[in-house]
Image (cartoon, one colour):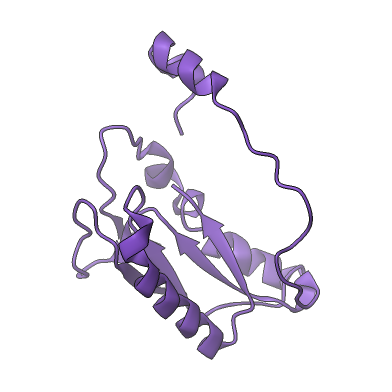
Amino acid sequence: MTRYADMPEGMARHLARLPLPEIEGGAFVSGPPLAERRIAVVSSAGLGRRGDRPFGPGAVDYRVLPSDTDANDILMSHISVNYDRTGFQQDLNIVYPVERLKEMVARGEIGGVAAHHYSFMGASDPVPMQPFAEDVAAAMQAEGVDTALLVPV
C-alpha cells in the first residue's frame, strides 16, 4: 500500500482532495448471523494458481482459487506501474485473506469458509465483466456461500 508521504506531492494532494462517498443504510440483503455465514473471497488482485493462464491487460474473466491451495502456489499477474506489490509479497492475506477467515472460523466468529474463492483483474471495464461475475455468483450460490468478502486491489 502506498502512503501519501511516499507519493509525488502533486499526486498526494490530488488524492487527498477526492471526495469519499458516504453510504447510508445497512446491508443490501438480509442473511444469517455472522457466526452462521459461509464466506467466499472475491479479489481484484489478478491472482491465480501456479500453472493458470496469467491475466492480461484489460482481462475481464476470473480465476478460481480452491481454499486449500498452498500460499506458495498463488501468483499475482496484476500489472500496473501504479501498483505496489510489497504487501502481497509480505503477506498474501493483504489481497486474499483466506487464512484470516479460517482463524475466524476457529474462534467461532463466522460459520465457514467456502471451498472456492475467485479473483478478477482490477482496473478492467466492468461491463464485459458482468457475465463472468454472474458465473461467480452462481458458483458461490451452488456451493452454499451466503457472503462474499470483496477485496478490491
